[in-house]
Image (tube, rainbow, N blue to C red; front, side, top):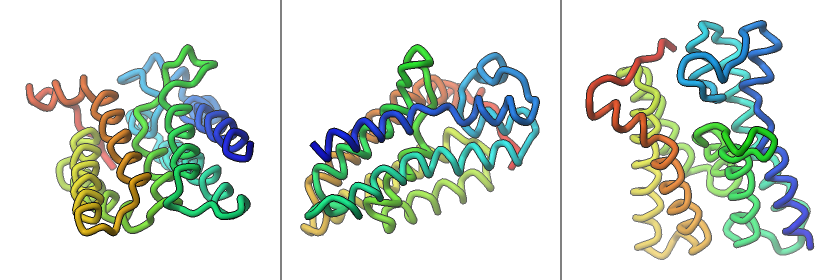
Length: 202
């Protein structure tokens, strides 16, 4: 029962469109009709408002972190490597990408996945975030940075799985994240291959 309640909490919190909220708060208009039409921090950044973009990213991270963290801390015998923790993390991510009150059209999931990893395995997050930030600063391609960061996470978790240091639950979550993020970035990947992907200025 506790897992179900936290899964519902995770989905509900994950589905809050913070990009849309901050776009309205800062008077940036309807985010879904600007730039890529996405509700994530990158598209908020395209409006030129870095504060709104930063707030969007932080809130998207924390909505992936808070339900998982609370589940681990409040449910007896629930650890960061448990299947219950991963189920809550998946719910947060699915809520962000497929929010029920936005006709299942949400964000791409990078920041929310990062928040989930922050609760599940901070070391994995550190690897992914370092690669993501370095790529973003140097090349200014948000989607490429996301894919490079994801690749680092996959290699890190995979290596630890081979050494018997990563739980089956974390490996499963990482596989799910990889499939989902590649799917949500498929149009970006096509533009990257065609050298038509737009840059962002951080």
